[in-house]
Image 1 (cartoon, rainbow, N blue to C red):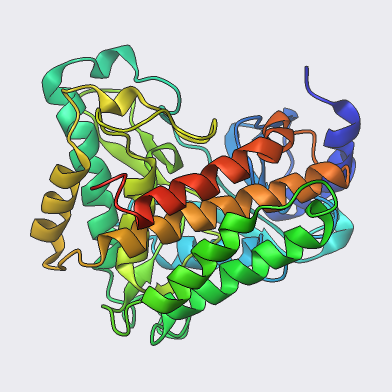
Image 2 (spheres, helix red, strand yellow; image 1 turned 180 degrees about the horizontal axis):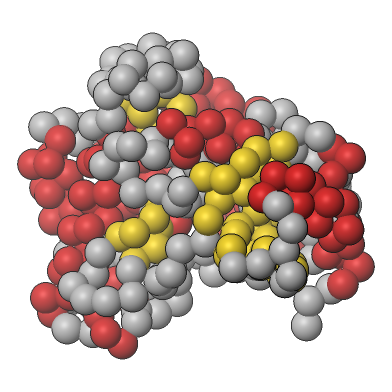
Length: 353
């Protein structure tokens, strides 16, 4: 059951209603529901009259520097409205903390399925399973082919040196989390992974818009067939940078039949079915769609798992501090050490592409 006291911490329904009326006009119907599936920023489903809306806000409590910047997320989604990138229509953004206690933004709610633990029944054919993987890659290619200047995002980051900064940034996120979590347990192998990444980061890379968290359960497929992505979500980590960090991240969540059991609940294995494309096939389609060669595979997939470990450790810190009721966060006590071991296996060539 939802925790009403936690819902009260992330939204003042009366203050939000006043804000919505000022922005959208009066409504006869009003309801707020917390979306239970997310594990980072909080997502609220709001009915306001005939409008079905989604609100994104940071989690309550202290967060690591640069994490959970929802206004940055809004800026990129708003900038992409007239591009081939499939994003939800934006409605408004607010930085007045008197409304719900934090920055937040509003977008329209889309209709379809976000695929997590299992595929929709309508996709359970060889052709549709292939198409799910192809659509996922094509959606990523659309992001990486955006004309940055044309959409006004040419100041959205500094792509030069992006990949090295990713290693530094996520090491800092881990260090922030360790300040509390190391009281519970240590993870020495993560320091080995940290050092390997620092020593093996590519010195040069392509420069594009990057999503930062692009994977199967951050896109929505429309309600029909064949499978078609109608929306890409969770842009909080987007920037100008190295597109191969996005591809490595996607691949780290895409399970092949030859892979061991995943280390956490953050990864689903149904895509290891023989009907789905393999990781290698996803790479080949990406290269064909973008003209970008996927080099340094071990680095990019190791970086992806390292970043996931960093997220997990931040989750675990928030659990220890009582700043989330998400049951996943407690599981990161064992989940992050398992992710660290997986990163080391990729480094050692024990989990090949």
